[in-house]
Length: 307
Length: 326
Image 1 (spheres, chains in turn yellow, brown):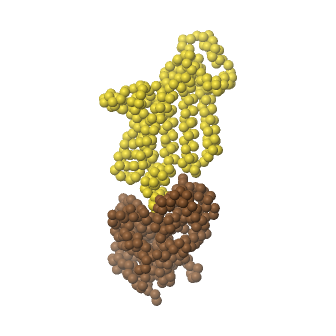
Image 2 (cartoon, chains in turn purple, yellow; image 1 turned 90 degrees about the vertical axis):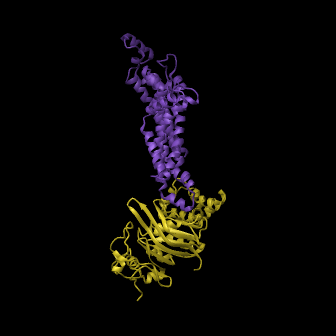
């Protein structure tokens, strides 16, 4: 078990390093950062002076050495959009808000999808199953921005129960978390349902019934633990997609000051350093989630091996 | 009747599928006495497994018991207000079951120990320690080497024969009075088959178990059973003491089955097969289900269903033209 954990974490670190290299190449080698730093009408002399000042005139390999050294010191560079502020400082301020949103959204999604999927699997083809499947399909067919706008119009504008947008207390969290959760609920419910149906039809479930194990225990212990691998796979996917993708949309719709919104800002304001830091941090988050999911696999199912 | 444990009376099981109603079991009646081993024999689709599921209350949607009764020590497990609760209490406890496929019968993500202790903890209210002791004892009883190590292992770490032993141990946890073995050796290698059958026979003797052995293998029945019930097309064809049925089979189907089984004590140049296929149970024939494949078939066989009738003491046959000992 521990060798599994250590090996998996090691693999994760390699991916993070690779991500750092890619980010470095994209910002220094494939584009000229000075293009972003200086106004378009800058003269050639101004450009060269600035290039020398920032050290971009040196060989790429030397630049890479500096970059790695800076990263290892925790220096992610300075923002162009907000001069004088380090990019990691901006990420440090916005990331917790994104994490809060993702945690709320995904907890909600999983908390809703597990019972829904399990109830639907009790009697496939039954009335309850059909209702749940239809609702799930509607949920997963709606794009995030559409769900977001719908929720805004209904609950914030028409009913005025909740604030329209911005960061604040619990009431501000509800709508963006829901917008993040609903499509995920649809997808997760479908997977929980089909995985549970598969498991409930398996031979070991029959044997458990013949042993006199109560249906409740068969559902929540025997079948669910086996269905868990599939559910975990999709949950992991949902979490990483939310962290590195959907939050951008949801944060934009609800003006939630997380790092997704700042990623958009960074693009609009041509702040390549802030953007690369955000990308790097997002990569680290995605890798972390994946490592945790893989370790959980091993906990649920002893048969799983690293390949 | 001495001490009748189980009584199946006019059992009828139907599956309501899209194709139509499948008449899987039609009017099947038999009993099992204490200490008796009964073989239930038939080819695939004859209704023998469904019969065993019906006894255990495990017939699943879209199937259900549409008529008849299963009585455990005189008490109905199908009808009456307490039947549903009774069967839950009885199965795994007084009546337990061993299934066909040991490879998929254990939950792959729980240890052998956890699956074994589950039964005694539930039915007998054992503490964790008591259940563990009992589980180790059971693993030893079914001749598993190194029970302590097995206890901690996952099913994937054991071979098919070992898993079947674990399943038998599991079925024996609560000292059942009746063990239903549904083709317990079909999925195993021949050498392992013999070991498992031997184990079952030993346990039957040592623990005073009654056994209902379901199989399509007449050789298995011959070696282990006291009585045999031959099923065909969802109905009983012939019931009788094992030696009599083997010596003088009266139903043409039993004869066919015996002729198609290789025997060591008779020199036959060729094995005889039974031509044709079993009847479609969605639209079963109105007459004898075997009529279409029977050599002795007459008009009456096609138009009228033969009921199970006693031809001599302890021997019943459902046939208009039974072979008689001559």
